[in-house]
Structures are given as structure tokens and as C-alpha cells.
Length: 363
Image: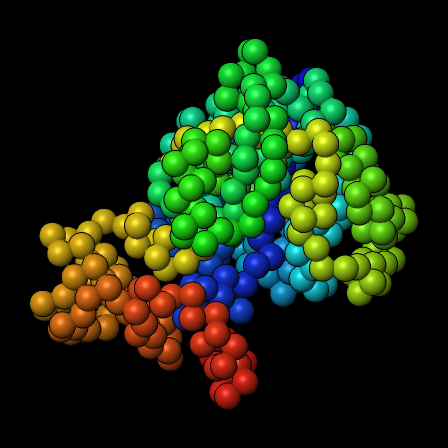
């Protein structure tokens, strides 16, 4: 296998509603420098993947409305590296669409699929782990996912139960026993204590032939929609064909549609400082904190008698807070959110209510 056979699909179509109000429909979290590093999450993901495969082999799958944002943030890529979804249909259609785009270019490809909004603290270890996965996938008819060793009973992630070691040369490569959706706290504690369960990172590695074969077997109706129109890719008919396929396509995740049903599924048990940065709480856990465990992003924040609180406000805004414990305080443009950190799962409901009561302007 040559390096030019390695391709990467970055999924960048989500709207990041749990990071509202900083993340809005017009500029979701993957397009924001949410960690204060000087680079957006998408830019960080692209640079990370450029260490593994040629940058011209990286495809960004995103919504049609984010085309210009992607090209603005990744100015060195070609327009054909951005493939556009006319509507959101979850991860399986997104991956199937990318499969046939890549097949047109290189039917022998090994493909890495990664979300655009994850935090990876140890990038060297991540690259080493992906390279091991690529080596295995290039030799075996296998679907690989990266499992993350849990350090707490997290209820916000799916879990993977692992079985026996699958390759004596890669001791952390295991056969998958089961996938489990997000558990309650009691079950999450059982999972962590057992030592058999890993967090499901949503990062995948497989040969193009293996993933297309798995779609043909487990999601033939999705696979068929994109196989049928693939001859039109690169022509003037592509856009209308893609819109038709998406309008007929079911909404289904790759985990539910393929990974939970396939027999040839493996997991590389990993530790490289991973978070899916799905919520304000996950950002809080990775932020620098003061001696009262307040995480403050904003140059003019004065905080009194407060602890365990996350504050994210514009630098030009003077904000004075007193008497808060375990709160989220976020201001973005014309919205101020103050919410108990323990109730942050309510934010999606707030966004839904705002849309109904106040219209799209605030979402």
C-alpha cells in the first residue's frame, strides 16, 4: 500500500446545537476557535489528517450552506475536495456519498473517517494509532473503529465491549463484542469497572472495498442511491442527482446501520487525550481553571464568591459575576445564556423553544 492510497473523510455538516449560543446555524462549532488555540476545530482536524495522508486526498463532507466557510478556512484545498449535502441525513449517507466520490478517484483506497470537531491532545499517539489501523485495514476485510479507554463513567458517549486480541502484532486491536448506546450512570459505572468497555470515538478506518461491501449487505438501499448516481459525479447533473438521492434517503447512522450488524468489526483500544467536545461541560473539563475551578474565557471578567463555573464572553464585554456555583455563562452576539452546568442537556430544548418563539434569527 502506498501513501497516495490513504484517503480521509472529514464530516463537517453538524450544527452543534449543544454549544449554543456560541455555535449557531450560520457558524457551527467546527468553524469556531472554541479552544482558543488560534485555529478552528475544522482547521485542527485537517492539519492532523495531513500528517497521515496527502492533503489532496482529504475530503470535507458538509452542508451546502457551509461551502464558503470551508473554503475560507481551508484556502489551500481544491473545490472538488468539498462535497456538499443538500440536507442532513446522519452519518451513513454522508459516508456512502464519500465512498463513491473516492472510488471514482482510487478504487484501492484505504479510508479514514473522522468528525471535524474532536479534541485530540496527543497527536503523535493519534497518528501512530491510525497508522496501525491503516496497516491492518489494508490487509484484512475489516471495519475498524477507535475505542477510547474511559477515565470516568460518562453517560454522554456510546460504548464498545471488546473481546479477544485480533492480531498478535497489534496487541491493542480487539474483536468487537457489542456496541451500546449512551448508558445511564449506574450502567456506565458497571462498564468502566469491568475493564471490557471503551468509549466509541466515532473515528473509523477501512478499505473502500470493505465499507462498500458492508453497505451492500446491511444498507443496500442507501448504497444503491449513491452507486446509481456515481456516474454523474463531476458532470453538470451531479447536483440535481445528489439532491434527488438525499430526498429519498433514510436518516441513519453508520453505527446503527452498519457497525452494529457487521461481523468483521474490530476496535483499536486507544489513549490519546480524546474528547468529542459535544457539550459545554466537556469543554469545561479541558479548560484551564482558577483556584476555585472556574474556567474563564474573556479578558474583562470579574468573578466573586463563585466556583466550578464556565464563563465564555467577548473580550470587549465587562462581566461581573457573584455567587455562582456550577454554572455556564455564555454571551455571543445578541444572546446571553445562564444555565446550571448539571442541566446543560436542556440547551437543545432551549434552542428548539427559541426557534419556535423567536424565529431563526437567534438560532
